[in-house]
Image (cartoon, rainbow, N blue to C red; front, side, top):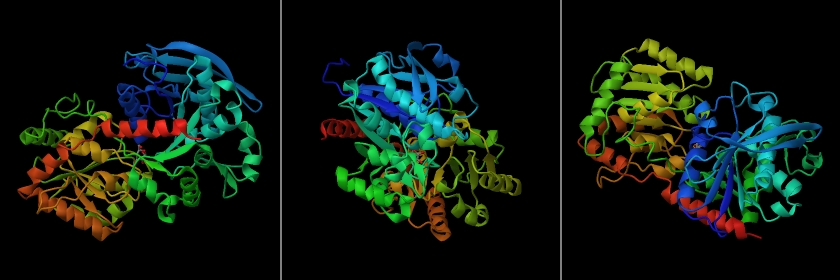
Length: 487
Ligand code: GLC
């Protein structure tokens, strides 16, 4: 794709980018959306921290393109920039190296996270002039990069190079708000006025997420329904008033539903799964089921496999599931779990695997390989989420002919339609209220459908749906273009 002066130039700033780093959906999105945008002619670049866990096979292909010092109040820290030509069409991925901050075992969870990610964010903005990439839009994601719009507006805009740059802040999860004591403002190079003036103040502390929402030139989130929900007290986690105000000032909070990489997630061509299949070869999907049952030491029966591949956190609806576990497991079903998270949930699944060894397989670990096998082999994929900004699991599941059973919220409401046995339309099973009886109802619906002749049709509907980035990437381009000419 030729890149002339008119080409839209965007830098996406994210603390996770698959396949270099990933702990959840943000990594998937930051890995696959830029690829789709490049294919559509956007000069799209991505920047992430150079964690020590980034596989060496990628780092080996990078070259150092800049080296500079970032000032955070009294502290001067070095940033070395490594560029990767990830798609064979010029540099597109940048790693920011600073071993003091990022040569650690995990991405998150350190006492100085406020400083690590302030450094990363500021270095990302500084990098633009160092590598001569004059972005139209700097696209920040989630609280870790929430200070980006503030730095851009108040520290960098004074320089000609940055004068026309706009910022976009995307919320992938409003619940994680980056809340720290007021005293850290000084350490990240901002004065106390950001607290006293209220811009960053949040219940007596400061919030990075609030900074992003307050100072960005535009705010977006990852589905249309969630964009509306977060402006209500039920889903706003204390930010709904601010979001309503910003929606008024900016005209809207954009909501663009995520896609998935349909090349990397293709049941006809996926090295992780046992047997390739498509919508016309359901018997091959069944073969995947048999093989998974064997591997996980579950009896090879016709019982439907219900599965979950998820971080084990409250958001994912595990409380409502815990209430119905006994009743659910008295049915002729199997349950396969993959994920790690809060110990109360990990232990709940371990407990039920011990009590019902021929019904439950609890895999309390992180495995991209097993995840694909589960998407391919199971029958019903459960996401009874309390809230769900977009959700990607239901999209992967449908692509592999596994029927999503979801609560009607956020992106789940936008991507899954309850199967209608009259019209034969719909791609999943949907329940509305976050209560045990509603979820139990949905499980019975799933079980009944599974044993009915309609199942085949439902699986086909799910598999033939359109889950690629194509539509969303077009919407991103429209949004970027609007932001670019704004004010
Ligand atoms: C977060 C949200 C999830 C969303 C993902 C990517 O992980 O919880 O719903 O799909 O971000 O945007």
